[in-house]
View 1 (cartoon, helix red, strand yellow):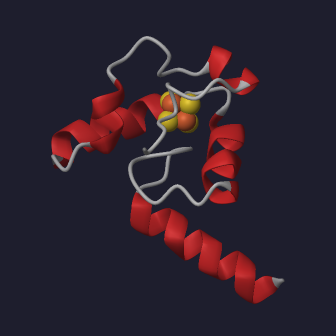
View 2 (cartoon, protein in one colour):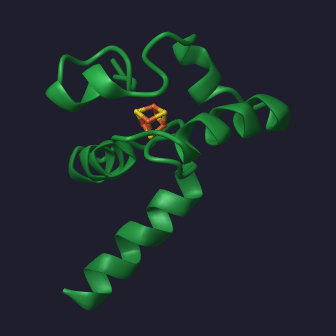
View 3 (cartoon, rainbow, N blue to C red):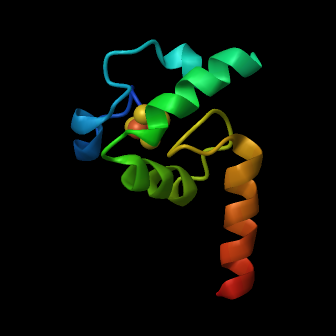
Length: 83
Ligand code: SF4
């Protein structure tokens, strides 16, 4: 089962900007809905923790830490090359 920024019990999620929103918004294929989710991420106080969590756990789907799937994959590849 895929976890979402809202469903896994992790301390930083208590302060998430998306805490009171519909999790499906972060897994939508609709561009407009994705942009709404990304706008929430922009002002999120735990954005960095969210992104690192997603990278550490290999979250393949959805928006995490203000990045879409392909953007996280690019970042992960970049980090592997730099390591
Ligand atoms: S960065 Fe985005 S997905 Fe992550 S907790 Fe904040 S609002 Fe939710």
